[in-house]
Amino acid sequence: MDVFQHPDYYLLDELLSDEHKMVRDATRDWVKRSVSPIIEDYAQRAAFPEHLVKEMGEVGLFGPYIPEEYGGPGLDHISYGLMMQEVERGDSGIRSTCSVQSSLVMYPIYAYGSEEQKQRFLPKLATGEYLGSFGLTEPNFGSNPGGMTTSFKDAGDHVILNGAKMWISNAPFCHVAVVWAKNEEGRIKGLIVERGMEGFTTPETHNKWSLRASATGELVFDNVKVPKANILPGRDGLGAPLSCLDSARFGIAWGAIGAAMDCYDTALRYSKERIQFGKPIAGFQLQQKKLAEMITEITKAQLLTFRLGQLKNEGRASSAQISMAKRNNVDMAIHIAREARQMLGGMGITGDFSIMRHMMNLESVITYEGTHDIHALILGNYQTDIAAY
Image 1 (cartoon, helix red, strand yellow):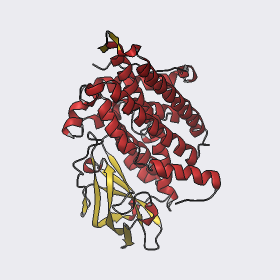
Image 2: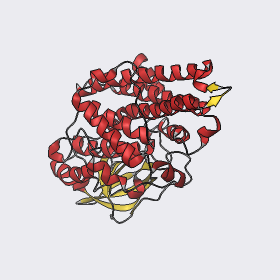
Image 3: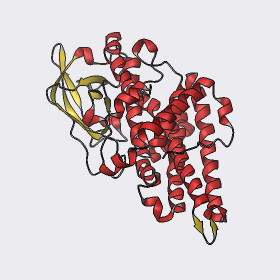
Image 4: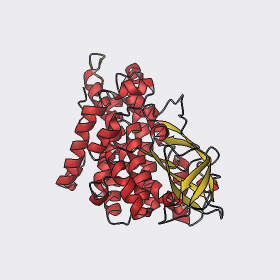
């Protein structure tokens, strides 16, 4: 039974609007009802709960900030962050599905797509009728996406796309993929590739110890004919996919707090119930030290993301500010998961509790959408005006 209670040490709820709290609580209720009862089983089996996709659409988790005219609820970015916090409290893999759909598929179509592309794809992505994926990372180009070799050539009313993308969330089940590739002049463009196009395959990645309830795979293009009407016209160059990553990293910064909250809440609850040496382990100094440090770090992360959300709503959040929040909050969450696991002793490694699953998931979260070290270099570049990569 999911008995989670969220910590609010600095009374941050007082800074949220009624709409923010309503959105957060509705998402939390959905997680408790639909995710928590099944997620350990799916993670143990390394299976993707595909049936949740339509539910996520029904509760408004896809493209929360997309305007109503394109099928979204038209909420602000703090609402989006709170949603991702609650979903990742359930599982990082399920939040990854939401992040990819919202920030990496719907966002570029909304921001850089034609009106026809928006009308055609966004409403179906918002409801979960379509599941999307985002193709940037390649087998030989991860932290250096500008080196990509996936490319396309002009062939009249269509282009011919060749190449491959790797480590792609949602790939095995996706209906559409926003793929970034170089044209014949070497300029990076975004293309909407659709399931069923000849030569487009999405083999699944197996043997993962992390994000086991998330579907990961490849996007492989073997002379795929993509209509020119499927090329995003609004923006090109590496800045286009990187702007999508900014949106996704913003959601990750909030989501990681949810994973940390769940580990903290589990450890706090367990420490009050577990008796050793004649009293609850919550009464021992070392355990209280762990709990004190956890709530401190969670509170600092909450303050960081709330301010970032305000800046995002105002259109003033910079890439470097988003990098700081993603880097700090995921690192915070993974340390809390490790400390919480220790507090549960041997029980902490079992599927009876969520902590070990969170810990394994966060090993992916600290790597994707820019590694922990790359985000440090982004901050260093911002501070010094000297790129170290």
